[in-house]
Amino acid sequence: MNTEKYLVRPDKPIRISDLDPNDSSEFEGKKKAGQAALKELNKEIEELQELLYAEGKKRLLVVLQAMDTGGKDGTIRAVFEGVNPQGVRVASFKVPTWLELAHDYLWRIHSQTPRKGEIVIFNRSHYEDVLAVRVLNLMPEEVWSKRYQHIREFERLLVDEGTVVLKFYLNIDLEEQARRFLARLEEPSKNWKFNPGDLDDRALWGDYMLAYEDLLNKTSTEWAPWYVIPSNKKWYRNLLIATIVRDTLVGMKMQYPAPPADLEQYYQRVLEMVQSYEEKEPEEE
Ligand code: ADP
View (cartoon, rainbow, N blue to C red):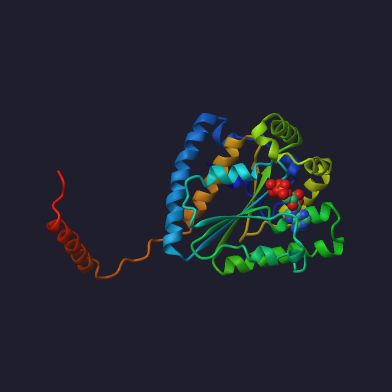
């Protein structure tokens, strides 16, 4: 699959309205085959994550941003299905607490970045500080407008120190959001997800799109690129993100740590240990 076409190039500004949230062209709309391909990718990601953890040297940060119902939770579930929970963590960023607000906006973010061997998925992120903050007028422009540069440089720091950074904007449209709200109201098991306040954000859709467009164009860098993922079709969204995560992990070229040089000698010792038990208690038929 050509995932490059969903990349926001630093030298080529995008307009969100030009990008089709219904697109599934790289898999020609073949949902069943796409779902089967995802299962294979899950296995590969599981193995690669094991390797990342075993090697214990590199780190992967995956940033997810979307409008409400955009599918951040579903993406995390589908793409990281089966991974070892010891090496993967989700950090969710909600409305900041008083303690978080008492610090600079990157304080809570930096403390959640991955350690060596770990994958961390950001469910919302520092980008809320140029989104919600901007659209809802929580800070004056003079404050938030400086943040694009802070963010570029903050991510540069992470990358220079050995973290790989991937950023996904899950692109849905207003029609799809309306359907997903309805599903939340109709299905009892989804009722808990419905938040009346989300309708207020929907009313500000145009402002959010402008804020997203601006941040995508200003903070997609060579070192920490943004992908705009067509996300009306959940299966295609999962498939694209899993492909990019798999490809990125492969590109990180991890290796299992070298075994002790005298492995054969330890093998003999342990074999003898096991054999000594077998001599004492013969195996039951
Ligand atoms: P989610 O929608 O991610 O499942 P919530 O329904 O609790 O979780 O929504 C989190 C809310 O927190 C969103 O409305 C988001 O805009 C808001 N938020 C997150 N970070 C910030 C921030 N730095 N400043 C203001 N609002 C924020």
